[in-house]
Image (tube, rainbow, N blue to C red; front, side):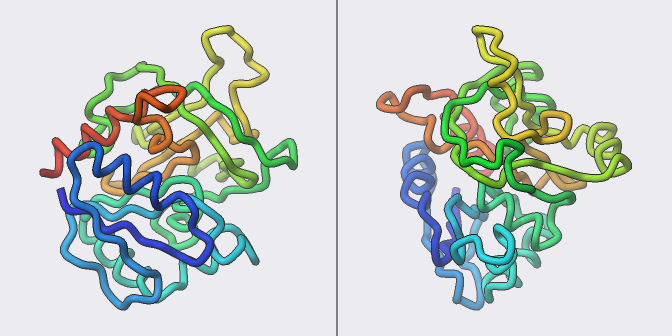
Length: 228
């Protein structure tokens, strides 16, 4: 699986994402935001970080970087595209996913593990999981509070486009379930055709035996299997 990993000024999770992809058998090419076009790729990835220092709005400036014209073009043509954390914010700002990501309800940066329920497994992203599977992965963000109007939310739910949802952990601590106040506990969504996925948690930091949990490894293994 050939992967184009896009780097913006302020990106800081590119090596984590690179290692998770390579560990799963992917071939990864780093692409600078100022480039005019992407290389041939089976998967496009926008990793986490603080592109442009999160000035204006998170992801708003990155969405207008030169490379994003080709990212948007290819995503709309069907190339699988994954955005994690700041990458999710950028996909929304670029118009590839609906809604918005507001400041956390606590108005504080949150960094801890969360429990996620797999709502609607779908190839190429979550096909390695089953509906109802629960995984534990970390979050690290200050603006991850997903919001959309009721009509958009109902459409996402009705079309099976909510990919991940925050749920209480094994200890039942409901107050720690949703780390940011996201409406309907939404942690990740897809576009209409299912080839674009955005999520706030960091599955790339849950893929190795040295991590607190390896639960994210199946996401990357599943993508490599589906796209190779």
